[in-house]
Image (cartoon, rainbow, N blue to C red):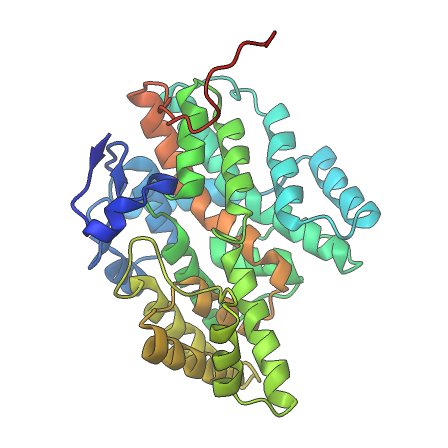
Length: 385
């Protein structure tokens, strides 16, 4: 391992591999000023690309031409249906264990999908491209089946005429989304698609480095993303805002709430980032699109953006801490009418592209990931003493 150039303070605490460079990748570059997917900056992609184009870029390694994109999009649309036994298992879990965490349900669904995949144990580049497509296409269907079952409704069939983002909303709600809603979801999926060696991606690469299969690696990544210090932060950020809104409606000002939170050292989710010390590039982009949608749809969601802006301003003024993308994500998905418990599974519907790209990269130039540990336990003893 080589140590990156960082401030002396950051170098003193290297828990969690802080400040460490642990490998090479051509998939993504994350730094203080830019987030780049295979040579394309995130603001450029959010403004000018679709999620299907970004998915192709990440999985295939280059920007698609018109013919490649058309073929890729049609293939994804044709792969969205899931086997009956997977659908039935998800429905049964929802009915028998309605409090089961949706990320755990999705992890189980991906594991079940592996059993029907004829190339599950094949780690060749050709097989892994096909498995990447299957997972990308079918994960939104799994998410939708679960939410519809929780709502006491029959799942809807995926609609091949819809984009990836629009079909995700359709499967989740049973309602065909307006173009504006589909666009906002599409942008959010682009922003969440990849982020170099984050915890879940690193987990997937560690598993892949043992020569395990793609489905196993993705299951491990889902488990890592589930935690509220990683993917679950978007849910936690919305729950925080709901708590502040409830306090506000009882007469507690946002200033008073935040002051008390600071005094009691309350964990405020949706703020700060290991890499982005001067602000997450994605946060402003998603806030802009989310607020625009809330205003155009005439929803009550705009009040949440007003509240969020006040919280954000206080955090910046008093703590000099910027929001990360999970903070506006909560408000944006709320504006779209998405149940909070499905925020992190939606993250999976996007990040699976980055995971699969990294798993393939790991397999193509592999060495098992096996770092060393510094022992801090007791000194050597004799058992018979």
